[in-house]
Length: 272
Image (cartoon, rainbow, N blue to C red):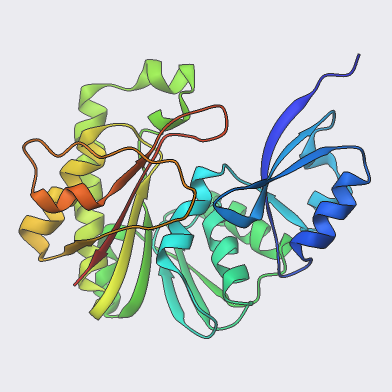
C-alpha cells in the first residue's frame, strides 16, 4: 500500500484560479479540502510528494503551512500598493502578497544573504511574480535607506519552536531566545522608522516563546509608540496571548495553536 501524505498548499492565483486547481488535483484522486480561513488554501491528502508534481514545477501552488498564510491576510495588501517585506526569504508570504495584489504595485523583498535570496528569487520566478524588487541587507539597518512604506510585513527570524520539530525544540536555549528577542526588537525598531504615518506593520513568528512574541510587542508599544490593533480573520483558530507583566495592548495580538493542521504562530497588527 502506498504511503499517504498530508500537505498544505496555497493556490498561486497569478497562474491559476483556486477552482481550476481544485478540479485538477481532485481529478488525480487526491482528497482536497479548503482551508476555512483562506479561500486560496487547501489541505491535501495524497500518495505523492508534491514537490515532484508538474503543478508544483509550473508554479500553480506554493507548499505553505496554513498558519503562515495568516500574516499577509492581516496586512491585507491591495493592487497597486507599495509593500515592504523586510525578512522575505524563501518567499511564501511574498508570493502570497503578490497574488493578493494581482501582480501589480511593488513589493520590496529584503533578506540578508545571497543563499537566502537565491531561494527567494527561485520561488518568485517559479510563481511568475513580476511586481517584486529583491534587495539584500540587514533588516535592522534597513531604515538607513530612508524609504517609507504604508504597509510592512515583518516575519522575523525566530527559534521556530511553533513547528514542534524535535530537533528545533532540543536546540532551543535561553541564550538563543535572548539573542533573537534582542534582534527582533532591533528589526521592529527599523521597521517603525520605515513606516509612514497611519501605516501598518504586521509582526509574526512561528515561535511559541514569549521572549520573541509578547515581549517584543510590549517593547514596541512602550518604546516605539506603536499601537496594537485587533485582528479578525474569520474561522481562524486562535488563543489569547500571554499578557501578564506586559502592556494591556498586547491582548490584541493572537496566537495560532499548534495542531495537526497548523503550526504554532504569533501574529500582531501594529499601527502608528
